[in-house]
Image 1 (cartoon, rainbow, N blue to C red):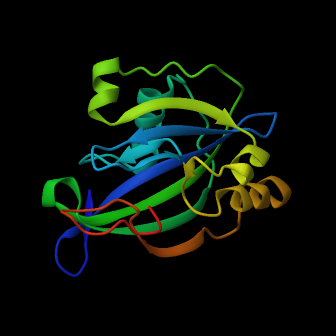
Image 2: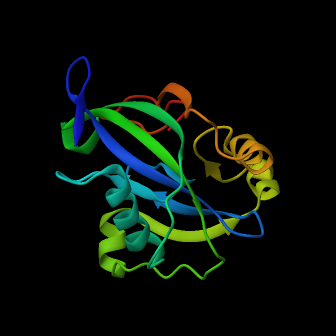
Image 3: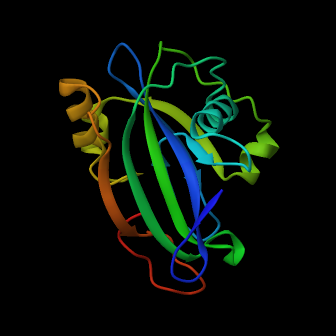
Length: 182
């Protein structure tokens, strides 16, 4: 699923803000050949014919192994500009993020190690808000994630999803300099 922007389309993706009873957040470590290595919310692209929720459940199963989840309300949306993404198919990606309250579990992705490597997934683990706040050597996206999670924990999901705006990718594309956000 894509949405046209000026030029190539924007890839549509879903993310799950998975929060366990200890208020920990599940993050996925991705490492791309271009050098970007960071922690993001689990999720990914929406396949043709999938609803946002169907895509999210599929992605969470693939990346975390959680067999069944309750997909709560949408909490935010953010677009990342990344000209040339996906081998030139897209100009970036719009992530729609849903709250996914869940039990504590040991992540065991349903994907094989080879499939995870093809998706650039190199790790999955639980983080506390304090750990996200203190992350100095690890890249954690979106920027301000600790504050966003703290707001959700204190006030619950917003009545209307937050618009986190449009950011430039932290990943270099075809020799471009690295930018500040992904």
